[in-house]
Image (cartoon, rainbow, N blue to C red):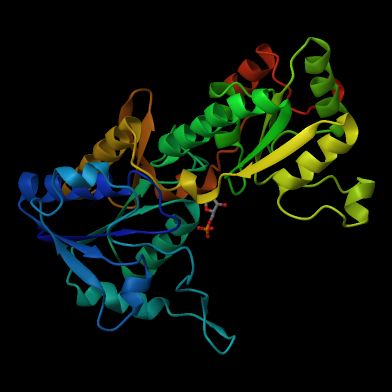
Length: 360
Ligand code: F6P
């Protein structure tokens, strides 16, 4: 099949690096192959509206400035799965045929999606059902997608979390406080572990490693004993409260996991604590150099895959190069933090407390 016109959509939570990826796709497709590129707005939502929400993308419109811009110019959504679409009256219905019809109306020869595991699962199902030639670009600040060492957005999120620790340290030292920083990662602790190492955290809590308050309190007491007047704690949002904790039963501690951890540290050590929930600051902002490079390499390779007729593949970063892997395998190989991996080992080697029970 001779390719003439391709589509691109961004799906799931936005992140820094999506715009550089869009730019790379447009430049490669238009300048390299002479194709047209259609941007579909708001992820799969753009395929469900009538008229369909789309925009023609050209190299001049997606030139230099897009490299530096956070978010996605196409818009995105992490709601409204076309296979289980929530209707205003409370029903959940299958609108996948409408999304496929939307794709067909655009007369596209192939589709590129930038998404995380949830989005790729949905888009792949749509592609299988509708015979859509699909290529995927991995993006998630959480960096938990399998078969790629890194996904777009993670590096910038990591910089934001590390900067937050850089900002918290002087104020922690000035007021002799324990600062608790809660960072994103819906299910995985990659941001917390890496930023904790980069930002000099004393305690790093991630969902992949069970923690005990005895261990955390012992570390804070040990820091105090050697003359340190402050401590930095970083906790991934996916960390769970301790179900055996009496304070949990009484329901006295409200708020996020960061607030819970801080309250318990305060109660156990007498330390004054403060909590920062970093939130979407990790998702926004200017893409850093690493994300721009990844996004550019992924965008170019995604277009090359279409030119080569290689579909149902995801571009991936591995051993200093761009590869491509089956989308299904990437989704199947969820990438949690390895509790025995190099970074966990590094943290332990630096004397950082990972909250481990037997380390108390
Ligand atoms: O999966 C990416 C992510 O940023 C998670 O780290 C976070 O839990 C979630 O999305 C937040 O989603 P929302 O934009 O719906 O608040």
